[in-house]
Image (cartoon, rainbow, N blue to C red; front, top):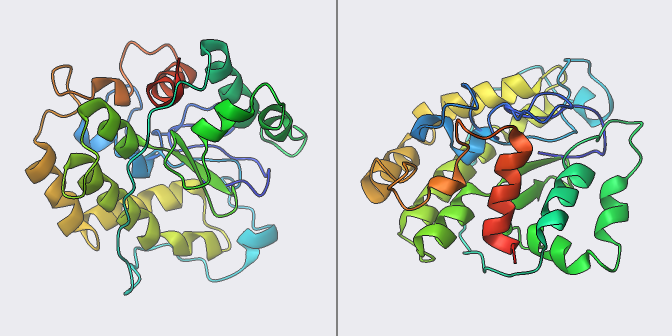
Length: 255
């Protein structure tokens, strides 16, 4: 989720600084056991801007200490399918992860900007994090945090780019959870764990109708080995978070 810009923190299963993602942005359970409930992109939200230790500083110091689901009345999910582009070599996929998704503490400088603005990497960077957020890495709130675009991965792997199909349905639930818990960013002592728990609550309340449609439209095996999109989800065999992220980046942008 965020950057701000480089305050420490990291992950929904990603743990602070280590990129274990605390759930790839949405898996509050074990990141290594990927089932439908554990791999929702919403829990995979992660990033360097959240106050994981609960110390209120900067923009996190504003607002009441409260982090419960509250879906805006104007909420309407938006969907735009990604486009496959062979813009990145295998080494570049790993370099992006190292430069932009790790080492984001206050003393890390800005290796991401240095890497993405290098002429040799610009095309790859534009594919991984395009301005319209259809790439594998989606940055939010002025790069305050990022998410892995599982819905977009589903669209490419299942060849389902249209509204009403599985990927768009999946994305709607994740967007609902994220928007329902946006107030966590104004809660002075809220931690990333609070944001994660809020999203879990939203799945059962404000976003229950969106979440329920996933099983109806996607079926129950879409993230299984024979479900058409197994590579979009972290596997028990993945050595680390980087392996998973680089694989998904490659689905979007690999040569």
